Amino acid sequence: MGKRDDLIEQYANDLKTKCGMDPDMDLLTKVTIGCGPAIYDADASTVASSQPAELETVKNNFLIKKLGLSDGPELMSAIDSVIETYGKSERNKYRAVVYYMLTKHFGKNPSTADQSAER
Image (cartoon, rainbow, N blue to C red; front, side, top):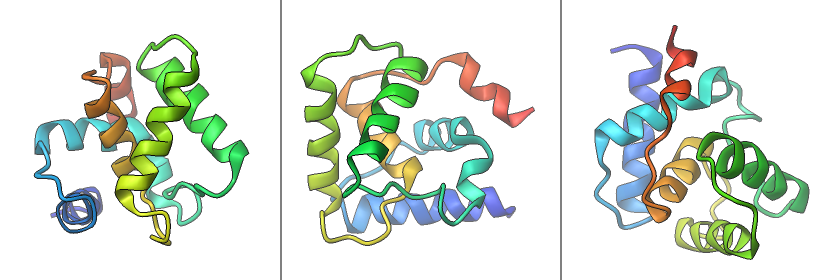
């Protein structure tokens, strides 16, 4: 198993134990690949949920640009809901896990553009 596979297993474990979800491994893998090299950087691999600027980045770069959603109050509401599910006191909120839950929340599938990070 490669480092990415190890991280996907770690994310799946977080989804099961911390979020009470049974992850769709194919979707989790797509979302993880879509995160690109950020998953290997200690700072970039997590979401600082207490920083409003970080949540704006999640909204703009993931929900609007990657998933193609229109800006509106429901986007920040969904982010807040995901952070609540993950646990506000949870120190390490992995970006791939947050993005996975947002993808599920909106019933989206990352676009094929996300797979370009794999090449």
